[in-house]
Length: 129
Image 1 (cartoon, rainbow, N blue to C red):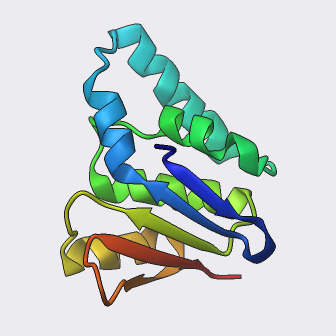
Image 2 (image 1 turned 90 degrees about the vertical axis):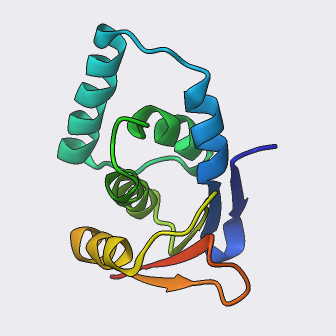
């Protein structure tokens, strides 16, 4: 199952955080590999050029880390979505985040978050202009 689904006409993307966690749990990164991921993250933050939507999943899997908090991983996803000109990011979580975590994500990434009424594990993130 792909972890990313894109609805091109509306600039809505769905990302499965569950798939990311499952993929990461099977990896054992060396210190050098972890350092490379960290440096790529810094480079991404400094250049923030337009990201091709088809590269979203690949870049996301390189930016995210199980050694980083869910809040910071989601902030990175929001930054990537903004660079990709995505207006709505839907994140499918294996568990719910608490209200404080959601508020922190909103503050750090200048977005608006709404939980899906049918599933607390589905986070809707709306980018602010």
